[in-house]
Image 1 (cartoon, each protein chain N blue to C red):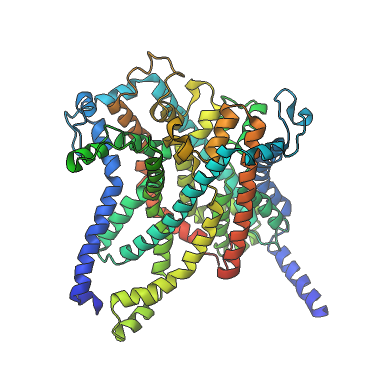
Image 2: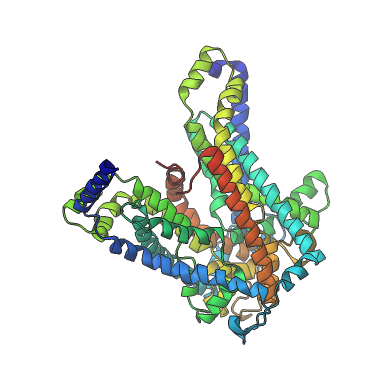
Length: 290
Length: 313
């Protein structure tokens, strides 16, 4: 019994401590910045804040939430996330259902699958995609952020692997009762795959919320930037030229920057516990085939 | 032969009885996704022809003059291009290797943590950065690693070291890029190894226990060999990423000061093409990257299939 040997016990205690320290170190930068956002502006600028707020105040959050530009891009982010996830899940799930049938039932299955997979192997390229959006007159249009990434081939493959693990007897029963494919998908497959659908939707939501680059290149009008692109512009690039100077006065102050970073990350931090419950299972099931 | 046809006929009849008679519904269900992919993936793919043209917006694809391999020729005779290929390879290869080794070791060590609560908390903490965007993390890093940031404060007060320009000095920038990428991803990458660890047959350990093998011996002779196949699969598949140095990370952390040591193919394409208006040249650079990546991906998937039976669908 190695558990009881002295050397293993020493190792175990050491190991537990080291791993815990590493785990805490992973979060420390985030925690520090949270403390900065909760400190008074003077203390933060003087670099007095470490792991505890100096002169605790919610001033920065109040100012951020009173800023019209910030609120506008927050709303655009919410719009794109909700709309993008709903449409994306619908399109990807029905495609995955059809592709989960084997070639005996759906002869064109493999042709379609390759049609999709090729796009994963050979992406279109930045400039041609940009010109396409330009030619479709989607610049400054919310759909420029939603349509290009709507079909997520990886998600289709994940979902079709889930659907294939649904026992065939269920669909046979539905067919015998006279249901067509649409009905079977809706009444049999959807309810049974809710956990996997939830996983994939959470992932889609996170990627929509975090996406900044498409907003940066397709939204020429600064008032239409989603939150991630807005933050990229004023925090990372520190580029204020796109905005009315009076309207964003002070948004680049240290405490305010920190508060914006946290508000931007908050939705992720909220869905994270749910994500975590599902993603291990999702990844493992997605990776293991019959 | 006869038996075969009658068998398949019987099967077809059975399929029909089951209601498998609506392939057109299935086509309709794939249609929306297929159309979207056609427009937003295949059209830009064809748009790559502009790499062989001198694309002018007012002339369009049809009338822009063809120039053959001019842009590719210019690319390979350009010193700066050679430099960014070097940067890209350096970043991508270091990340590929470290994002394999660190998660592997971390999974092995985490597997030894017996207190379930502790194990779960550690996992929760180390997975988290994976879900935050590079915009958020760059905002954090820019503040923390800045000249007056907490890290430099600590270095000065505790070790008496002069402030380091983590994001402004070429060498430190490279270190920051590689380390911060591992920081963001190592936790998440342990998942696949942890899953493999839980799949090892406990009987192997019991037998080793009876034989009096120490935990170290068990790890060396049972755990590591059992994880080897999945390690090989992950390593092989990572090969396709050799030219992917992570645009989002570099783009959000770099600055003109360190272009020489920090610029990568993707950021170069963005600046030359979208900011500089060199549409055709930037497309040529992107096209070159896509072709090399495609070759690598196809090759690595074949290897993974051949040696580990890995399939994506």
